[in-house]
Length: 390
Image 1 (cartoon, rainbow, N blue to C red):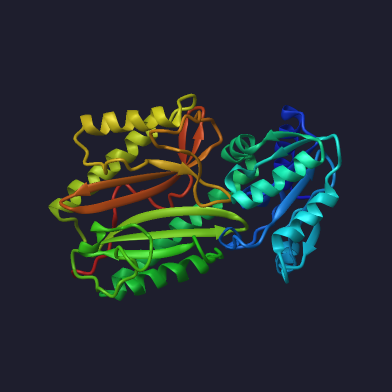
Image 2 (image 1 turned 90 degrees about the vertical axis):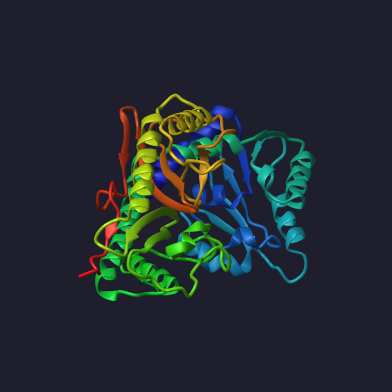
C-alpha cells in the first residue's frame, strides 16, 4: 500500500471513529474515488448507472458497479473487492439487490447520498431502514477530509500544478516563432504541451483553451459559445488568455495565464494586468487560517473596491482542488468553511477593463504562515511577451 493510500485510509478511519459508525455507504463518485481510488471518467454523467462503495471500519472495502466498468476499476482501485452487476435490464434494481445482500443488521451506517439522484438516495435510505440500522450523514466529514491535503497529496498536486504552468509557458514560448495562430490552434497546442509533460488530458472537465483579442470579453470555458476555440487569428498587440485544466492519477490542476503578442503592453493592458496582480496580492493577504471562506471573500471585495480595482461583480475568488476540478471551500459569499493549513486553493482573479475580462488562476498551499505558490514555473507578476514585433 502506497504512503498516499495509507494517509487517506487514516483520514477515513478517523471519520469512522469520530462519528461512531460501523459501515459507510458512499454513492458520490468523488467520495468513492477519494476513498477507493476508482476513477471512471464521466461516471457522474451516466445517471442511469450506479456505483456504490461499502466501507467497513478497518475491514474490506467493496464496490458495487456495472460490469462494463470493472476493467477500468481494476486498474485504478487501491484495495477493494468489486461486486459487478449486469446492466441488461434494470441497473438500479441490480445494484439494489447486491446492496441488500451486503448490509448487516443492527449496525450504525454512514451515508453521503445527499448529492446523488433522488432515486438512488431513496434506494439507499430504504435499504438502511429495512436493515433496522441508524443512519449518520457523512458528507460534511468527507468534504472536510478532502479539503485538507496530506503530505503526499500536496506533493502530487504541486507536481501537476507546476507541470500545467510549465505547459502554458512552454506553449507561449512558441508564439515567438509561430506568429499568427487561430485560437483553435492555440487550444490544440496547449493540449499537446500538457501531454508532453506526461499529464493526462481526459474528457468532460479537462480542457485546454486559448482566447485572443477582443474575444476575451467572454472567457467562460464552455464550447461552442463564448469564444471557446474559435477560428479568429492573433494579431500584433493581442492579449492571449490560456487555460489548462489537467488530470494526473486522479488529481486535478487548473491554471490560466496571459500572454501578449508583442514585446510590451498597451496602456489598457498595463492597467488591467496591474489590477490583476494587485487583486492576487489581496487574495493572498486575506487568505488566512482561521477565517471563514465568506469572510475572506468580503474582505477581498472591500479592499479591492477601496483600491479601485475593477473586479467582476459576484465572481468567487477561488476554490479548493483535488479529486474533482473544484472542491470546497469556495471563496464566495455563502461559504462558512474555516480556512485551514494544508488546504490547496486555486485563486481565481478576474479584472474587467474596457469591456474585456483579464483572468489569472494560481494554485497555492495555505500554511500557518501564509501561502506558497505551487504552480509558478515563472514569476507571473508580468505577462509572457512574444517578441514578434522584431
